[in-house]
Length: 312
Length: 312
Image (spheres, rainbow over the protein chains, first blue to last red):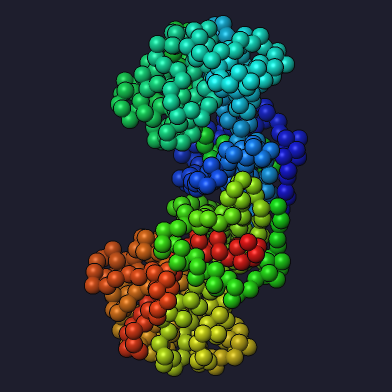
């Protein structure tokens, strides 16, 4: 059994190779070739923390993967990262533990950002006057970094609640080669941007239906559990096409779930990323559509990024 | 983070200390002080294997525990153990991984056998002419070893399907100080024994209603998943009192679940071990009753045995 620490994991990480594996994983998932039991959740109210446990197996693989992923939101005050956890690989032939990846949450952040890059390939309009990033945290940074290779636009708007965090993000994005505008008014961001990514753990809508122009794409990453939402249900219902990582997860607890449960999406088909990838097609039909992608995160993404790190 | 291998774990294992922790765990579970999400199951048909993932947290503890526990039934042909897996402890304050216990399934086997010892303290009749063990595997051995300190009888009957396995078990039990009778006829075992433990992964009944005499106790350990059963439903329904580790698990997939689902147990109360322990009472009222205990295994047992090993 091998044990890798964060630096050893990052040294082995190849974004392009993992992106290909993630595409294969999305396709396999949509073709029902993946075992992915329901997520386990634990709550630690006294520590302002929670933990989720995911596992997955892609039929025919040599290994299966278990992920323990914690969020402990008082950690930063002690100088620790909020995201904690690890991933493990086990032999699917003998059950023996093969590898423990002490990634401190990085692999989850990376596979999420790379899923966003895949979405951009499928959904980005041809005309993008500016990219809009809602949120200033780790996912907001990684997402932008990986968008650069599929979107040539270098005009950026960033929304955040904290001026300090906005200034820090501006610094980061400038070093990545962007011309950066910061704002605390999400409608202002939406008025300028045709490709928007929402990355916050917000529990109330940040963007509303009237904010969004025709020809805009929105990737919603923040909603990964019940109660987390960044988009008003009426905005979701205004989309011309909706892409989901998992029909089941997105309608249950994803960004689109309130709109779905209020039956505002009856006129739309919810299409899985894996279905579009299997057809080798673009999702967007023209530059007037509003497209929306809802990413809740799949166990098969963990399976595939571990495969990419281990070279399995 | 510390990593312990099997030998280091066994060196730290103290059966009496862990038994006390298990009793506290059963009580906490029955008092609803334990978070125990539904078990995750993965199947590996091509390898004749399966894996279950359990997690648990006892409110107020400093740590929570995740267990990955595999059964790969073709492993012995390759010289590997069928039981594979590990347990992990994480801080309930920060989410940081604290310990990985590479126990190869031993901690599960040990905490199950010690639960059997706790059941014996609560249920064993005063008169035991012989102990009966159904099965010849690891659990059949560990269970017997730990019964010795609570049951003084040293007459033993063992049932198995394989003569070779029976002879090997006889050797083992003789070294433990027992006078051993072996049989391939379970009714013969039941005719001689007042304390019976069933430990097989059988999917068909081994013991039937007419086999069991008044004044007998049966501990059923083998049924830990849907479809596994060692006792005929009519035998279960013949019990005067039934003890369960978890009402929810036992009625869903335990040994008693077919009888329960066929509504054969309507005249009985199913009592949790933790409830009896909290009352500091015996479960058996007299030496004429038939008592039955159904052990499906609880995540809190994993939490408590890890605590015992780590000294937390």
